[in-house]
Figure (tube, rainbow, N blue to C red):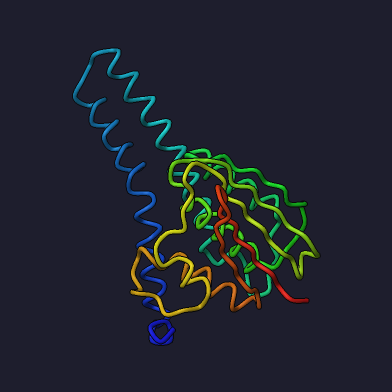
Length: 214
């Protein structure tokens, strides 16, 4: 990936920040719209509508930010471990606002932070594979220090987004931008953690496998 070799830490940070901002703009904008309705309309039904919109959007923005903090943030010092129960909590909160249902079949334990961050990023990728909704099942085998993650995204007309398989296999990305930075970030986490990624489509399911050698 020659483009990745030329990608500086500052560029990567800027692209990830752009991605996070893109994800939370919509719910934050909806909160602003709800507040404007409260300021301008005294009708009781409109005020109730605005309050419902604000509550829902605030919950959505909070869930997205909590997920991003764990999936992209520092999450402690170098070598830190993260409770997989915390990962399940933020993943569940994030997926409550998505079209697909999350099935978390992962035993609770402490795991090196980059492996947890990788798992959360793989959930984002799996979610992109079922744009019309479905079920995303997350499973783990092996020890927390050397796990095998399997994510199965099952739904109506699942698909592998254009260029996604190439990026995860380590091939040169067509371009490095805020849209492609999330799977690129997942690849960088996998490399740092010594994990091999595999992405395949099997009939009505897209399967992602991440294997770390002991």
